[in-house]
Length: 249
Ligand code: CAA
Image (cartoon, rainbow, N blue to C red; front, side, top):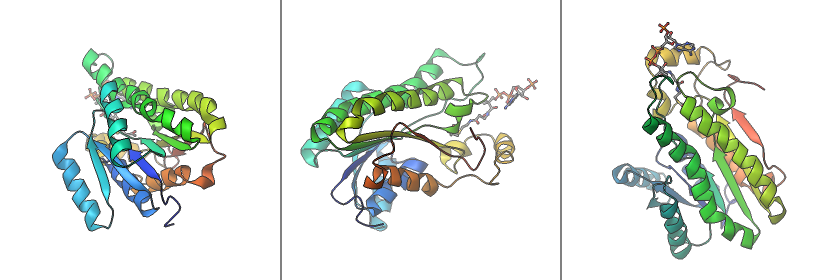
């Protein structure tokens, strides 16, 4: 595995979360120089230390990915400090679960801004350099709930479904320039985000997963690693489900 991404620079947004952390580790092990954005500094410093102990050197940058200008500044900093980014993994995301009749405008906007507008903000900041260099990988982390909808997640399901529309449109625009754009749609993975779902509701969800368990962050990271590699050059505009069989289409 080592060496497949040698010399590549990979940006992973939200690298302090469950899937983000596993993806940082996977891409580092594959040889990439990994850069992660963060919002909470103490969590990010702790994550960087943990990674260092495991032999992974991750660069961390503060960035609110829901803010267009901060993403522009991020791109400039990474370019100056490290070099041009070859791989962008749009992973940062939040939930504000509640039924529609209770959902506030703030809960709607927070999820759309953090989960969907962020994908535009970040990709927009790095795509021109990829086009100039005629190489690049964009991997967008969506969700099973963008594919099937979820009770209590009108905001999240809308944002996650929107991500794949973005993937398919951008994939067509950049295909001739050696850039691929794909979506990964994880099911319920054992992360803090899923553990925040009330236990009773979570157990009902697990009962609907044919594989019989939650997914592991590493199982998503492995798929992202493959899509980021040269071997995946003919795969673009695709949406990969990794959900233990919970939703098939
Ligand atoms: N389908 C149909 N009806 C449902 C339902 C469902 N899935 N879930 C609950 N209901 C019903 C309830 O039985 C209840 O009915 P009555 O009023 O007749 O008793 C009614 O809807 C109200 O439900 P709740 O009492 O549960 O409402 P609540 O406001 O307390 O909670 C909720 C709503 C916060 C959305 C809660 O149901 C919940 O947390 N659901 C889980 C949402 C979820 O899966 N989130 C995923 C987070 S992880 C993630 O997002 C990562 C990823 O990508 C997979």
